[in-house]
Image 1 (cartoon, each protein chain N blue to C red):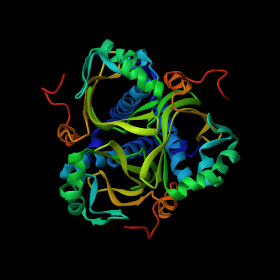
Image 2: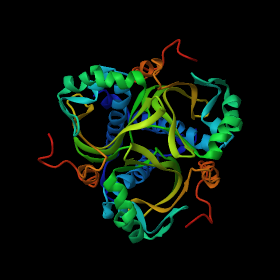
Image 3: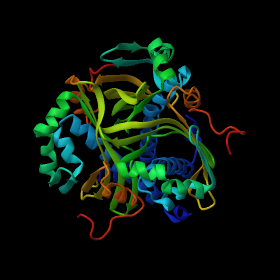
Length: 166
Length: 166
Length: 166
Protein backbone atom coordinates (compact mmCIF):
# COMPACT_ATOMS: atom_id res chain seq x y z
CA UNK A 1 0.00 0.00 0.00
CA UNK A 2 1.96 2.91 -1.36
CA UNK A 3 -0.05 5.42 0.60
CA UNK A 4 1.49 4.39 3.92
CA UNK A 5 4.75 5.93 2.80
CA UNK A 6 3.09 9.30 2.36
CA UNK A 7 2.87 11.90 5.10
CA UNK A 8 -0.38 13.14 6.64
CA UNK A 9 0.18 16.41 4.79
CA UNK A 10 0.59 14.66 1.45
CA UNK A 11 -2.48 12.51 1.96
CA UNK A 12 -4.61 15.45 3.05
CA UNK A 13 -3.41 17.51 0.11
CA UNK A 14 -4.30 14.72 -2.32
CA UNK A 15 -7.84 14.51 -0.93
CA UNK A 16 -8.23 18.29 -1.10
CA UNK A 17 -6.97 18.22 -4.68
CA UNK A 18 -9.47 15.55 -5.69
CA UNK A 19 -12.30 17.44 -4.01
CA UNK A 20 -11.35 20.71 -5.71
CA UNK A 21 -11.10 19.00 -9.10
CA UNK A 22 -14.51 17.37 -8.71
CA UNK A 23 -15.99 20.75 -7.73
CA UNK A 24 -14.55 22.43 -10.83
CA UNK A 25 -15.97 19.69 -13.05
CA UNK A 26 -19.52 19.83 -11.67
CA UNK A 27 -19.57 23.57 -10.91
CA UNK A 28 -18.94 24.41 -14.56
CA UNK A 29 -22.34 23.02 -15.55
CA UNK A 30 -24.32 24.95 -12.95
CA UNK A 31 -22.48 28.15 -13.86
CA UNK A 32 -23.26 27.53 -17.54
CA UNK A 33 -26.96 26.89 -16.91
CA UNK A 34 -27.05 30.04 -14.80
CA UNK A 35 -25.30 32.04 -17.57
CA UNK A 36 -22.85 33.23 -14.91
CA UNK A 37 -19.85 34.10 -17.09
CA UNK A 38 -17.38 34.94 -14.28
CA UNK A 39 -18.21 31.67 -12.50
CA UNK A 40 -17.77 29.74 -15.78
CA UNK A 41 -14.44 31.46 -16.30
CA UNK A 42 -13.27 30.77 -12.76
CA UNK A 43 -13.07 27.06 -13.58
CA UNK A 44 -10.88 27.59 -16.66
CA UNK A 45 -7.24 28.59 -16.93
CA UNK A 46 -6.55 31.90 -18.68
CA UNK A 47 -5.46 29.96 -21.76
CA UNK A 48 -7.83 27.03 -21.20
CA UNK A 49 -9.45 25.30 -24.17
CA UNK A 50 -12.87 23.71 -24.42
CA UNK A 51 -12.84 21.50 -27.50
CA UNK A 52 -16.26 20.23 -28.58
CA UNK A 53 -15.72 17.89 -31.49
CA UNK A 54 -19.00 18.66 -33.30
CA UNK A 55 -19.09 22.40 -32.57
CA UNK A 56 -15.54 23.71 -32.46
CA UNK A 57 -12.90 24.79 -29.95
CA UNK A 58 -13.36 27.67 -27.54
CA UNK A 59 -9.82 28.90 -26.89
CA UNK A 60 -9.01 30.99 -23.83
CA UNK A 61 -11.10 31.90 -20.80
CA UNK A 62 -12.93 34.80 -22.51
CA UNK A 63 -14.08 32.48 -25.33
CA UNK A 64 -15.38 29.90 -22.85
CA UNK A 65 -17.14 32.60 -20.81
CA UNK A 66 -18.73 33.94 -24.00
CA UNK A 67 -20.64 30.68 -24.47
CA UNK A 68 -23.04 32.02 -21.83
CA UNK A 69 -24.00 34.80 -24.27
CA UNK A 70 -24.36 32.71 -27.42
CA UNK A 71 -27.82 32.59 -28.99
CA UNK A 72 -27.84 28.81 -29.11
CA UNK A 73 -26.98 28.61 -25.41
CA UNK A 74 -29.53 31.26 -24.39
CA UNK A 75 -32.17 29.41 -26.41
CA UNK A 76 -31.49 26.22 -24.42
CA UNK A 77 -31.56 28.06 -21.09
CA UNK A 78 -34.80 29.85 -21.91
CA UNK A 79 -36.46 26.58 -22.93
CA UNK A 80 -35.01 24.80 -19.87
CA UNK A 81 -31.80 22.76 -19.71
CA UNK A 82 -29.28 21.11 -17.39
CA UNK A 83 -25.59 20.69 -18.24
CA UNK A 84 -24.77 17.61 -16.17
CA UNK A 85 -21.31 16.16 -15.53
CA UNK A 86 -21.24 12.70 -14.00
CA UNK A 87 -18.86 11.98 -11.08
CA UNK A 88 -15.33 12.18 -12.54
CA UNK A 89 -12.69 9.46 -12.42
CA UNK A 90 -9.53 11.36 -11.51
CA UNK A 91 -5.86 10.60 -12.16
CA UNK A 92 -3.82 12.94 -9.98
CA UNK A 93 -0.13 13.58 -10.67
CA UNK A 94 1.37 16.42 -8.64
CA UNK A 95 0.11 19.71 -10.06
CA UNK A 96 -1.58 17.98 -13.01
CA UNK A 97 -4.71 15.89 -13.19
CA UNK A 98 -6.93 14.25 -15.76
CA UNK A 99 -10.63 13.75 -15.07
CA UNK A 100 -12.83 11.46 -17.16
CA UNK A 101 -16.61 11.78 -17.14
CA UNK A 102 -19.75 11.85 -19.22
CA UNK A 103 -21.55 15.08 -19.92
CA UNK A 104 -25.26 15.10 -20.61
CA UNK A 105 -27.39 18.05 -21.58
CA UNK A 106 -30.99 17.38 -20.59
CA UNK A 107 -33.38 19.78 -22.34
CA UNK A 108 -37.01 20.82 -22.26
CA UNK A 109 -39.23 20.89 -25.35
CA UNK A 110 -42.84 20.66 -26.43
CA UNK A 111 -43.11 17.04 -25.36
CA UNK A 112 -41.36 17.47 -22.03
CA UNK A 113 -37.77 16.72 -21.09
CA UNK A 114 -35.28 14.80 -23.18
CA UNK A 115 -31.59 13.97 -23.42
CA UNK A 116 -30.37 16.50 -26.00
CA UNK A 117 -26.67 15.81 -25.91
CA UNK A 118 -24.50 13.04 -24.47
CA UNK A 119 -20.71 13.20 -24.64
CA UNK A 120 -17.52 11.63 -23.37
CA UNK A 121 -15.25 14.15 -21.65
CA UNK A 122 -11.55 14.08 -20.87
CA UNK A 123 -10.55 17.10 -18.80
CA UNK A 124 -6.97 18.16 -18.07
CA UNK A 125 -6.58 20.36 -15.02
CA UNK A 126 -3.66 22.09 -13.39
CA UNK A 127 -3.00 23.61 -9.99
CA UNK A 128 -2.48 27.30 -10.71
CA UNK A 129 -0.29 29.91 -8.99
CA UNK A 130 -3.11 30.87 -6.59
CA UNK A 131 -3.56 27.23 -5.55
CA UNK A 132 -6.83 26.73 -7.43
CA UNK A 133 -7.33 23.84 -9.84
CA UNK A 134 -8.47 25.03 -13.26
CA UNK A 135 -9.24 23.36 -16.57
CA UNK A 136 -6.48 23.64 -19.17
CA UNK A 137 -8.06 21.47 -21.82
CA UNK A 138 -11.37 19.74 -22.11
CA UNK A 139 -12.20 17.43 -24.98
CA UNK A 140 -15.78 16.35 -25.66
CA UNK A 141 -16.90 13.76 -28.22
CA UNK A 142 -20.60 13.10 -28.78
CA UNK A 143 -21.55 9.53 -27.92
CA UNK A 144 -23.52 9.12 -31.13
CA UNK A 145 -21.39 6.48 -32.75
CA UNK A 146 -18.25 8.61 -33.14
CA UNK A 147 -15.54 6.05 -32.26
CA UNK A 148 -13.36 8.75 -30.69
CA UNK A 149 -15.66 8.90 -27.64
CA UNK A 150 -15.23 5.28 -26.49
CA UNK A 151 -11.52 5.41 -27.43
CA UNK A 152 -11.05 8.41 -25.13
CA UNK A 153 -13.06 6.89 -22.27
CA UNK A 154 -10.86 3.80 -22.50
CA UNK A 155 -7.94 5.97 -21.35
CA UNK A 156 -9.53 6.75 -17.95
CA UNK A 157 -6.49 5.46 -16.04
CA UNK A 158 -3.92 7.35 -18.13
CA UNK A 159 -2.51 10.60 -16.84
CA UNK A 160 -1.70 13.50 -19.10
CA UNK A 161 0.26 12.59 -22.20
CA UNK A 162 3.14 14.79 -23.21
CA UNK A 163 1.66 15.80 -26.54
CA UNK A 164 -2.01 15.73 -25.62
CA UNK A 165 -3.87 18.97 -26.07
CA UNK A 166 -1.99 21.60 -24.13
CA UNK B 1 -3.03 29.59 -0.85
CA UNK B 2 -5.25 30.33 2.15
CA UNK B 3 -5.43 26.70 3.14
CA UNK B 4 -1.84 26.59 4.28
CA UNK B 5 -2.81 28.76 7.22
CA UNK B 6 -5.34 26.17 8.37
CA UNK B 7 -4.49 23.37 10.79
CA UNK B 8 -4.62 19.67 9.91
CA UNK B 9 -7.71 19.43 12.11
CA UNK B 10 -9.46 22.25 10.28
CA UNK B 11 -8.62 20.84 6.86
CA UNK B 12 -9.73 17.34 7.81
CA UNK B 13 -12.95 18.68 9.28
CA UNK B 14 -13.70 20.63 6.10
CA UNK B 15 -13.24 17.49 3.98
CA UNK B 16 -15.44 15.46 6.32
CA UNK B 17 -18.08 18.19 6.17
CA UNK B 18 -18.08 18.22 2.38
CA UNK B 19 -18.33 14.43 2.27
CA UNK B 20 -21.22 14.39 4.77
CA UNK B 21 -23.06 17.11 2.83
CA UNK B 22 -22.67 15.25 -0.47
CA UNK B 23 -23.96 12.06 1.19
CA UNK B 24 -27.05 13.84 2.52
CA UNK B 25 -27.77 15.26 -0.92
CA UNK B 26 -27.51 11.97 -2.82
CA UNK B 27 -28.85 9.74 -0.03
CA UNK B 28 -32.14 11.61 0.04
CA UNK B 29 -33.02 10.38 -3.45
CA UNK B 30 -32.31 6.71 -2.74
CA UNK B 31 -34.33 6.91 0.49
CA UNK B 32 -37.22 8.52 -1.40
CA UNK B 33 -37.19 5.87 -4.16
CA UNK B 34 -37.11 3.20 -1.45
CA UNK B 35 -40.04 4.87 0.38
CA UNK B 36 -37.90 4.72 3.54
CA UNK B 37 -39.47 7.53 5.58
CA UNK B 38 -37.02 7.47 8.53
CA UNK B 39 -34.06 7.57 6.15
CA UNK B 40 -35.64 10.47 4.24
CA UNK B 41 -36.22 12.27 7.52
CA UNK B 42 -32.67 11.65 8.73
CA UNK B 43 -31.37 14.02 6.04
CA UNK B 44 -33.69 16.88 7.06
CA UNK B 45 -33.61 19.14 10.12
CA UNK B 46 -36.61 18.90 12.44
CA UNK B 47 -37.88 22.18 11.00
CA UNK B 48 -36.45 21.62 7.51
CA UNK B 49 -38.37 22.80 4.46
CA UNK B 50 -38.53 21.24 1.00
CA UNK B 51 -39.91 23.90 -1.32
CA UNK B 52 -40.91 22.61 -4.76
CA UNK B 53 -41.98 25.60 -6.81
CA UNK B 54 -44.62 23.83 -8.91
CA UNK B 55 -45.97 21.55 -6.15
CA UNK B 56 -45.77 23.41 -2.85
CA UNK B 57 -43.65 23.50 0.30
CA UNK B 58 -43.25 20.56 2.65
CA UNK B 59 -42.55 22.14 6.03
CA UNK B 60 -40.96 20.18 8.84
CA UNK B 61 -39.41 16.72 8.87
CA UNK B 62 -42.74 14.86 9.25
CA UNK B 63 -44.10 16.58 6.14
CA UNK B 64 -41.02 15.66 4.10
CA UNK B 65 -41.15 12.06 5.35
CA UNK B 66 -44.83 11.88 4.42
CA UNK B 67 -43.95 12.35 0.73
CA UNK B 68 -43.03 8.65 0.78
CA UNK B 69 -46.69 7.84 1.47
CA UNK B 70 -48.28 10.19 -1.08
CA UNK B 71 -50.30 8.59 -3.85
CA UNK B 72 -48.43 10.47 -6.55
CA UNK B 73 -45.08 9.30 -5.15
CA UNK B 74 -46.21 5.69 -4.74
CA UNK B 75 -47.49 5.75 -8.31
CA UNK B 76 -44.07 6.75 -9.57
CA UNK B 77 -42.29 4.12 -7.47
CA UNK B 78 -44.64 1.35 -8.58
CA UNK B 79 -44.15 2.29 -12.23
CA UNK B 80 -40.37 2.63 -11.71
CA UNK B 81 -38.46 5.83 -10.99
CA UNK B 82 -35.12 7.26 -9.88
CA UNK B 83 -34.76 10.54 -7.95
CA UNK B 84 -31.27 11.57 -9.03
CA UNK B 85 -29.19 14.43 -7.59
CA UNK B 86 -26.13 15.40 -9.58
CA UNK B 87 -22.80 15.98 -7.76
CA UNK B 88 -23.32 19.13 -5.64
CA UNK B 89 -21.21 22.28 -5.78
CA UNK B 90 -20.72 23.15 -2.12
CA UNK B 91 -20.03 26.48 -0.39
CA UNK B 92 -18.98 25.69 3.18
CA UNK B 93 -19.04 28.37 5.90
CA UNK B 94 -18.52 27.04 9.42
CA UNK B 95 -21.67 25.24 10.52
CA UNK B 96 -23.59 26.37 7.42
CA UNK B 97 -23.36 25.24 3.82
CA UNK B 98 -25.14 25.75 0.53
CA UNK B 99 -25.15 22.99 -2.09
CA UNK B 100 -26.18 23.60 -5.69
CA UNK B 101 -27.17 20.73 -7.96
CA UNK B 102 -29.65 19.50 -10.55
CA UNK B 103 -32.31 16.99 -9.65
CA UNK B 104 -33.73 14.69 -12.27
CA UNK B 105 -36.54 12.21 -11.86
CA UNK B 106 -36.21 9.47 -14.45
CA UNK B 107 -39.41 7.47 -14.80
CA UNK B 108 -40.73 4.34 -16.48
CA UNK B 109 -43.81 4.28 -18.69
CA UNK B 110 -45.41 2.34 -21.53
CA UNK B 111 -42.72 3.39 -23.95
CA UNK B 112 -39.80 2.76 -21.63
CA UNK B 113 -37.80 5.20 -19.56
CA UNK B 114 -37.97 8.97 -19.79
CA UNK B 115 -36.89 12.12 -17.97
CA UNK B 116 -40.05 13.07 -16.08
CA UNK B 117 -38.79 16.02 -14.07
CA UNK B 118 -35.67 18.17 -14.21
CA UNK B 119 -35.04 20.88 -11.64
CA UNK B 120 -32.47 23.28 -10.30
CA UNK B 121 -31.82 22.81 -6.58
CA UNK B 122 -30.30 25.09 -3.97
CA UNK B 123 -29.93 23.31 -0.65
CA UNK B 124 -29.07 24.98 2.65
CA UNK B 125 -27.61 22.64 5.24
CA UNK B 126 -26.49 23.08 8.83
CA UNK B 127 -24.33 21.09 11.22
CA UNK B 128 -26.73 20.05 13.96
CA UNK B 129 -26.16 19.48 17.69
CA UNK B 130 -25.34 15.79 17.12
CA UNK B 131 -22.69 16.71 14.55
CA UNK B 132 -24.71 15.55 11.53
CA UNK B 133 -25.32 17.81 8.54
CA UNK B 134 -29.00 18.15 7.74
CA UNK B 135 -31.05 20.08 5.20
CA UNK B 136 -32.71 23.22 6.57
CA UNK B 137 -34.12 24.47 3.29
CA UNK B 138 -34.21 23.10 -0.21
CA UNK B 139 -35.58 25.08 -3.11
CA UNK B 140 -36.40 23.39 -6.42
CA UNK B 141 -37.40 25.12 -9.65
CA UNK B 142 -38.35 23.09 -12.70
CA UNK B 143 -36.01 23.71 -15.63
CA UNK B 144 -38.91 24.11 -18.05
CA UNK B 145 -38.40 27.75 -18.91
CA UNK B 146 -39.10 29.15 -15.43
CA UNK B 147 -36.45 31.88 -15.21
CA UNK B 148 -36.03 31.34 -11.46
CA UNK B 149 -34.12 28.09 -12.10
CA UNK B 150 -31.21 29.58 -14.05
CA UNK B 151 -31.22 32.64 -11.75
CA UNK B 152 -30.76 30.36 -8.73
CA UNK B 153 -28.08 28.22 -10.39
CA UNK B 154 -26.16 31.41 -11.15
CA UNK B 155 -25.68 31.88 -7.40
CA UNK B 156 -23.64 28.66 -7.03
CA UNK B 157 -20.70 30.48 -5.42
CA UNK B 158 -22.82 32.44 -2.93
CA UNK B 159 -23.15 31.22 0.62
CA UNK B 160 -26.33 31.54 2.61
CA UNK B 161 -27.95 34.95 2.46
CA UNK B 162 -29.28 36.45 5.68
CA UNK B 163 -32.87 36.54 4.52
CA UNK B 164 -32.91 33.51 2.27
CA UNK B 165 -35.42 30.84 3.20
CA UNK B 166 -34.70 29.84 6.77
CA UNK C 1 -19.87 13.57 17.83
CA UNK C 2 -18.36 10.11 17.64
CA UNK C 3 -15.68 11.22 15.21
CA UNK C 4 -13.86 13.26 17.83
CA UNK C 5 -12.79 10.03 19.45
CA UNK C 6 -11.06 8.93 16.25
CA UNK C 7 -7.45 9.69 15.46
CA UNK C 8 -6.28 11.83 12.56
CA UNK C 9 -5.04 8.63 10.91
CA UNK C 10 -8.41 6.93 11.24
CA UNK C 11 -10.30 9.93 9.92
CA UNK C 12 -7.95 10.38 6.99
CA UNK C 13 -8.16 6.69 6.17
CA UNK C 14 -11.96 6.80 6.20
CA UNK C 15 -11.99 9.71 3.77
CA UNK C 16 -9.49 7.96 1.49
CA UNK C 17 -11.62 4.82 1.63
CA UNK C 18 -14.78 6.71 0.66
CA UNK C 19 -12.95 8.43 -2.19
CA UNK C 20 -11.53 5.14 -3.49
CA UNK C 21 -14.95 3.47 -3.32
CA UNK C 22 -16.63 6.31 -5.20
CA UNK C 23 -13.88 6.11 -7.86
CA UNK C 24 -14.42 2.36 -8.33
CA UNK C 25 -18.17 2.89 -8.70
CA UNK C 26 -17.96 5.63 -11.33
CA UNK C 27 -14.81 4.35 -13.05
CA UNK C 28 -16.47 1.08 -13.91
CA UNK C 29 -18.90 2.82 -16.25
CA UNK C 30 -16.24 4.74 -18.19
CA UNK C 31 -14.15 1.57 -18.53
CA UNK C 32 -17.21 -0.31 -19.81
CA UNK C 33 -18.09 2.38 -22.37
CA UNK C 34 -14.45 2.36 -23.48
CA UNK C 35 -14.46 -1.46 -23.78
CA UNK C 36 -11.31 -1.44 -21.66
CA UNK C 37 -11.44 -4.95 -20.19
CA UNK C 38 -8.41 -4.66 -17.84
CA UNK C 39 -9.77 -1.39 -16.41
CA UNK C 40 -13.21 -2.98 -15.94
CA UNK C 41 -11.56 -5.93 -14.22
CA UNK C 42 -9.44 -3.70 -11.96
CA UNK C 43 -12.60 -2.57 -10.15
CA UNK C 44 -13.76 -6.13 -9.41
CA UNK C 45 -12.41 -8.71 -6.97
CA UNK C 46 -11.06 -11.91 -8.52
CA UNK C 47 -14.24 -13.69 -7.45
CA UNK C 48 -16.50 -10.65 -7.80
CA UNK C 49 -20.05 -11.05 -9.04
CA UNK C 50 -22.13 -8.65 -11.13
CA UNK C 51 -25.74 -9.78 -10.78
CA UNK C 52 -28.12 -8.13 -13.24
CA UNK C 53 -31.62 -9.31 -12.39
CA UNK C 54 -33.01 -9.26 -15.93
CA UNK C 55 -29.88 -10.53 -17.71
CA UNK C 56 -28.07 -12.95 -15.41
CA UNK C 57 -25.04 -13.07 -13.13
CA UNK C 58 -21.48 -12.54 -14.33
CA UNK C 59 -19.37 -14.51 -11.86
CA UNK C 60 -15.67 -13.82 -11.45
CA UNK C 61 -13.49 -11.03 -12.84
CA UNK C 62 -12.97 -12.70 -16.26
CA UNK C 63 -16.74 -12.95 -16.75
CA UNK C 64 -17.24 -9.28 -15.90
CA UNK C 65 -14.37 -8.26 -18.17
CA UNK C 66 -15.87 -10.32 -20.98
CA UNK C 67 -18.95 -8.06 -21.04
CA UNK C 68 -16.78 -5.62 -23.00
CA UNK C 69 -16.63 -8.20 -25.83
CA UNK C 70 -20.31 -9.20 -25.89
CA UNK C 71 -22.22 -8.45 -29.09
CA UNK C 72 -25.00 -6.68 -27.21
CA UNK C 73 -22.48 -4.43 -25.47
CA UNK C 74 -20.52 -3.68 -28.63
CA UNK C 75 -23.76 -2.82 -30.38
CA UNK C 76 -24.56 -0.22 -27.72
CA UNK C 77 -21.05 1.25 -27.84
CA UNK C 78 -21.05 1.48 -31.63
CA UNK C 79 -24.45 3.21 -31.62
CA UNK C 80 -23.36 5.47 -28.74
CA UNK C 81 -23.98 4.92 -25.02
CA UNK C 82 -23.06 6.05 -21.52
CA UNK C 83 -23.08 3.76 -18.47
CA UNK C 84 -23.72 6.29 -15.73
CA UNK C 85 -23.55 5.64 -11.98
CA UNK C 86 -25.00 8.36 -9.77
CA UNK C 87 -23.03 9.53 -6.69
CA UNK C 88 -23.04 6.57 -4.27
CA UNK C 89 -24.33 6.61 -0.69
CA UNK C 90 -21.64 4.68 1.19
CA UNK C 91 -21.79 2.69 4.45
CA UNK C 92 -18.21 2.03 5.50
CA UNK C 93 -17.37 -0.68 8.05
CA UNK C 94 -13.66 -1.42 8.39
CA UNK C 95 -12.55 -3.37 5.32
CA UNK C 96 -16.11 -3.72 4.03
CA UNK C 97 -18.43 -1.21 2.47
CA UNK C 98 -21.81 -1.06 0.78
CA UNK C 99 -22.54 1.58 -1.84
CA UNK C 100 -26.06 2.37 -3.04
CA UNK C 101 -26.67 4.20 -6.30
CA UNK C 102 -28.72 4.35 -9.47
CA UNK C 103 -27.29 3.21 -12.76
CA UNK C 104 -28.56 4.64 -16.00
CA UNK C 105 -27.58 3.63 -19.51
CA UNK C 106 -28.22 6.51 -21.87
CA UNK C 107 -28.20 5.37 -25.50
CA UNK C 108 -28.22 6.78 -29.01
CA UNK C 109 -30.74 5.73 -31.66
CA UNK C 110 -32.43 6.95 -34.82
CA UNK C 111 -34.37 9.59 -32.94
CA UNK C 112 -31.46 10.82 -30.84
CA UNK C 113 -30.55 10.00 -27.26
CA UNK C 114 -32.76 8.16 -24.79
CA UNK C 115 -32.66 6.48 -21.39
CA UNK C 116 -32.30 2.83 -22.33
CA UNK C 117 -31.89 1.30 -18.89
CA UNK C 118 -32.41 2.53 -15.35
CA UNK C 119 -31.56 0.37 -12.36
CA UNK C 120 -31.13 0.37 -8.62
CA UNK C 121 -27.66 -0.83 -7.56
CA UNK C 122 -26.35 -2.17 -4.27
CA UNK C 123 -22.60 -2.70 -4.41
CA UNK C 124 -20.55 -4.56 -1.82
CA UNK C 125 -16.87 -3.69 -1.82
CA UNK C 126 -13.88 -4.90 0.16
CA UNK C 127 -10.40 -3.60 0.81
CA UNK C 128 -8.14 -6.18 -0.78
CA UNK C 129 -4.64 -7.37 0.14
CA UNK C 130 -3.01 -4.70 -2.05
CA UNK C 131 -5.01 -1.95 -0.30
CA UNK C 132 -7.35 -1.33 -3.24
CA UNK C 133 -11.12 -1.36 -2.83
CA UNK C 134 -12.80 -3.76 -5.24
CA UNK C 135 -16.36 -4.88 -5.90
CA UNK C 136 -17.25 -8.26 -4.45
CA UNK C 137 -20.92 -8.25 -5.37
CA UNK C 138 -23.10 -5.89 -7.29
CA UNK C 139 -26.83 -6.35 -7.56
CA UNK C 140 -28.87 -4.46 -10.15
CA UNK C 141 -32.66 -4.38 -10.43
CA UNK C 142 -34.36 -2.54 -13.28
CA UNK C 143 -36.54 0.29 -12.06
CA UNK C 144 -39.41 -0.74 -14.32
CA UNK C 145 -41.88 -1.69 -11.65
CA UNK C 146 -39.90 -4.63 -10.23
CA UNK C 147 -40.54 -4.18 -6.48
CA UNK C 148 -37.07 -5.52 -5.62
CA UNK C 149 -35.47 -2.26 -6.81
CA UNK C 150 -37.21 0.08 -4.33
CA UNK C 151 -36.89 -2.57 -1.59
CA UNK C 152 -33.11 -2.66 -2.10
CA UNK C 153 -32.76 1.13 -2.27
CA UNK C 154 -34.61 1.33 1.05
CA UNK C 155 -31.65 -0.43 2.66
CA UNK C 156 -29.21 2.39 1.84
CA UNK C 157 -28.17 2.78 5.49
CA UNK C 158 -27.62 -0.93 6.11
CA UNK C 159 -24.14 -2.35 5.98
CA UNK C 160 -23.38 -5.77 4.60
CA UNK C 161 -25.64 -8.53 5.87
CA UNK C 162 -24.05 -11.81 6.87
CA UNK C 163 -25.83 -13.85 4.25
CA UNK C 164 -26.14 -11.27 1.54
CA UNK C 165 -24.55 -12.19 -1.74
CA UNK C 166 -20.91 -12.98 -1.05
